[in-house]
Image 1 (cartoon, rainbow, N blue to C red):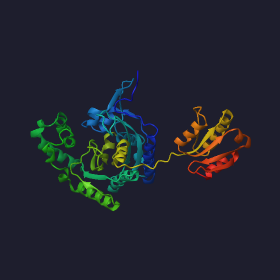
Image 2 (image 1 turned 90 degrees about the horizontal axis):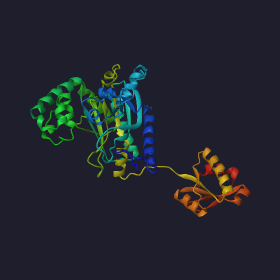
Image 3 (image 1 turned 45 degrees about the vertical axis):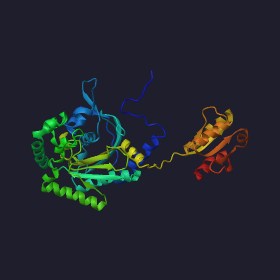
Image 4 (image 1 turned 60 degrees about the vertical axis):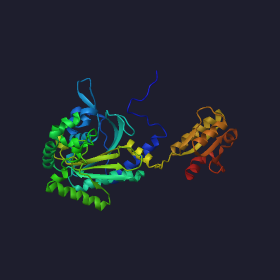
Length: 422
């Protein structure tokens, strides 16, 4: 019987994992610069957290969650996204009491959604995101958006498009909701079953439907921006002003609504415009979620954040033919001629590794020629051959593979020699 990875998952094997590590390195470095320290939350949470936080009317809750009952009869769910968990942690650990607000956090980890597998989309996927909870300053919105853009730019992407919109406050959303119901009600039978349910639950979600995207009624639906009150319009204008100051280019799209119920005010997506990237162009999405913390039992704590898939980022790099600058060099390979030499090689290699020198030896019982070929395949910078002569002299010839030049170095000085020639 043979086994394969479950549908919608993947193995990230050596040769690929280095790319992931490079991307994660960029993300962590930028989070340090922007002061978004890492938070790590459980992979599963109470199902009710996601129902209340993400929203009962969303596809995520209704169709895509991996939910199970534990032996104590509790309903638990593998996290489909990161924001609800972080909001829960913010409340549970009373971070709202910290003197410095907002509390800024970042995360990288696996998320789980039962959806149709396709290129760049998996049922287990790795998501990077940031959250800033505890401030309603529009400058924070601009900072979060700039950080997301910086990740893609520093990874090497050029073909990017930032789309922003305002969903307004509760008053705006309520007025727009009634207008949408009035608009869609006479013709709702033309729409899919999901949209028929959404009409009363959350009609805004009809605008985000993939099944009925070409229906003319969606194109002619009332625009939320037309309902912005003075406060919401002013807030959106400030966000745009800060983005202008930061030199972040954007396009305003009144149809951008995002797929989770907790969004309000600023919402945004970053898309790839690279040729051949695919029909689904979204790389990253985020927005403001004033009210989410209160929904799960905390005090008033406005927040904003984004989430991006590392799988989608790597796909965009592939579409633009961007090669990541990955340093995975082997400093030294030791070729051992016999068992005595192998014993010395093991001793030496341990001392090299203790000083941060990447070193390796043969574990397959190859002859000298096979070991030299292995050193070449591994792209070793230096090679040392150990035999009777070297053991007697307590010294070895260090060969620089790029030129073939060799230099005789005593065993006791090998570490210093290699460190000085790294």
